[in-house]
Length: 321
Image (cartoon, rainbow, N blue to C red; front, side, top):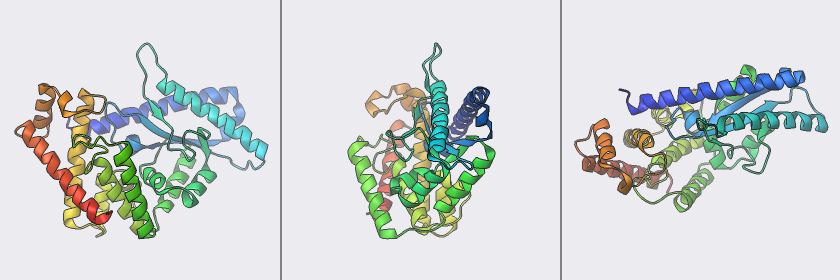
């Protein structure tokens, strides 16, 4: 049998292969219909759990579609090119999320593009990174930490990785960045969290808190990181520790809490696709949880969860306030 971390890798590879296969098939159809498209650069970025390599049985796909103009400068020509790629992106999303006799492949979330729900489905490469260099809010930059090109033009994917590295190379002013993260955390608590310790993603001391602490440290200090280290909070914490940017206790507490809650989430998403309360767990699910995570009882497991979340909250208080 596979452990929760190995299962996450398998779910991620499955999503990668599915997305790339659908993307390439739709692209071939587009080029057959419009040979002028063949020379264009385009790619899709995975963010969220797909970008981080932490997919579960219930995860959707957070995607951003990009194209590069390649010498097109006129406003009407640019509009034509953008419309072409909007149409292409919409077809990819439809193929991934359409209901069929056998169900759908994945739900797709496109809200992490610069204009959220309001703007075009596909962004132009230069304008996208100009926005993230000059205008993006801190929460948008944090989301981009997990960005990973998954399909499309290899040349554009390489240039995307270079631009992403540049975004995180230089440290930011600590006080306003910390204030932005504190504000974001408050919004999450008010709008998304259930306030219960089994809210493993948004609850106080949960996965999002660890994500925010790791991201804040990187944003303030900056530096060169391998993309694989940047995208995943556990690997990012390890990279920050190697550079001396986290104390031993910060690294240990945050890593343990993150790994434990990721593993819990992985198991729970097989049994329950939606957010789960302890009252909804069957005796069989409780038994599976504590046995798979090497506890002697469900009560012991729940006590460990509360203790780890409490340690994260202590570090939140000292690092974010």
